[in-house]
Length: 149
Image (cartoon, rainbow, N blue to C red; front, side):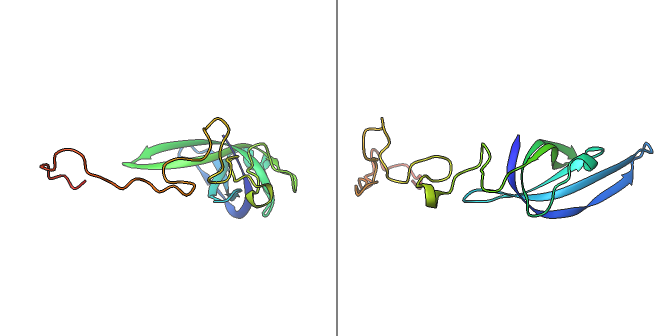
């Protein structure tokens, strides 16, 4: 899976020794995705990749990650682990990056603006959109049941 966004937080490296006596290290960053509703995603790099994958604060990247959850003592934990990355150039969106709906006229995700007829869909939207009012609710059938709806 690939996540695109801007690095907004650089968390210090953590190092330790495993029960088996092997040394380990882990580095974490927080990336804020692009789009109308940006999400913050914390991801990590573990082991030898810490020295090969280096992210800089304020720069945009496309980060390839593996997502895995595991159970420990009845609780679930999720890791977002990066294994590859490429820096995105300024002003050029990546292949999966949404466009700006204010300048292109097309909202994020490639959908036409709300209420716009779509080819092959029979013209204007139905069901109360485009100036039409929906039909009032009229109960049907037997009123003897005690259901609240």
